[in-house]
Length: 525
Image (tube, rainbow, N blue to C red; front, side, top):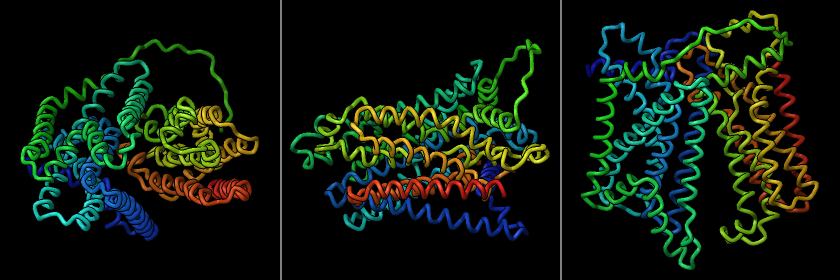
């Protein structure tokens, strides 16, 4: 069984990273594309390493070195929980691949364990990407003993087990509940978004403590943060205590996650087929009746087709709508808290002009964080030939996908602008920037997503997770979208009020010109 698990896990990882295609392809353009993808991933990794290292250095600089291991452990666990939650249902409990493998001379247990192992390996890479840079900075300044490094390595190896188990249970539960509903995909999307919003709200409530505002704030900051993070995620506190030399904490760090994970895997592999059958069970009624048929234009028909395809995939929706949801949550939070409460909480005076200055690009950053067009071409999969054989133009295909993205995003954009404009007294020109700049960036993100996806398409996928979450197109679109709005936001911080309107106008015109250029390029591709 061990050999079967290793072989199946190896095949899944090779398929995930496209290693065989890179090794054996004779297409020079495809090989060059993979090399380009590798360079982009290298840049992304450097950015993450720089961010985590800078975060750890900042904590050490503030005299909060003791909470660095605690903070990094909690951060890595949270990222694993979120990413695994979005793909657990479609990866672990997929019957499509299972039905193919079960016909081979492979044990059912090996299939289940290999799926967990492949997810564990990818999450372990994410763990070390977060933990290593921060711990190197911590070690450079604190000079811990040799035992620290051994415990750190062992703790990192066990770190993914608990969040992976929790996310798998939650993902399976949501899939099981939604499968009993009439519109199961919409129910699954709603439950997923409610869980994500609940996690965000809970973390904000935990961090909103009155003692954070006392005169001894900086003196007691380390203890306060340690209590908050430990209260939110106790395993992080166990890990910190284990590194500090508490032997009892070692039991919780290593044994508890391992036992919970092992029990879950043993139960799952025994009842896997029954669980999958129950989760994916559907009911159908043979009551279809022919009614009047409607005739639509080509773009309208493609637009409706795109929206139907979008809402049929919970993975597709939850991963591309999260930026818009965060924008609305941010806007509602600012609106209901009010400027006066925020000034008291943040101990900042005259906050209103600061918000008026930064809100356009702040909202634009959230509008460009995710885009359904970044993977809409790839989502056609092996059925791409259907579009290619229809009597339609490339422009009509691109237009329908952009319109579908705008149909989903515009309601969130509108609500965000309304709620942001209510608590802050804006001049006419400030209101103009708040409306036009995020709108221009939203349109830019839609067009940019098509451009990037045409450059890095994936049509031979077996699971939607590979396209929506793990494709180069999605990562590059997110990176370029955030940079395109984040850089002007950073520049505006140092911009004199005398020239701020001129700067906003230049950025607005520039982003619209780039959007038109990319749009024309897409239609000719």
